[in-house]
Image (cartoon, rainbow, N blue to C red; front, side, top):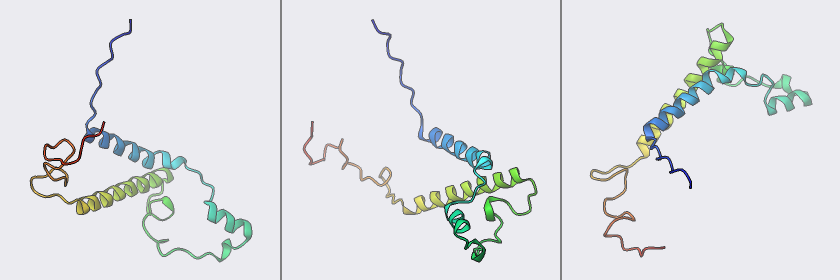
Length: 130
């Protein structure tokens, strides 16, 4: 005789998103400090082939978060952590804002889906499939 199955716990979307945000901020703020200090692929190839010296700084080289650090913060661990957290939050705000702008909601509908036209609607004209 097998034991009865444990009831499934429902996880809300808000809790899932909040947990994802916390994990992303921890990775950006803490784990990013332990990322490899070796140059990326393009920089490595430029170094190996001898044209690294001819490279020019990017226009963003003087920005507050150039080279994955925060200008004006002397502690390297804190500098990288701040840059990671602010970069993550910036991406979150930009993608969230873009999502809100692109999402089309009409009054009386749920997330842009017309009421009464879904697969569970009585007005649906599509035949049921087994």
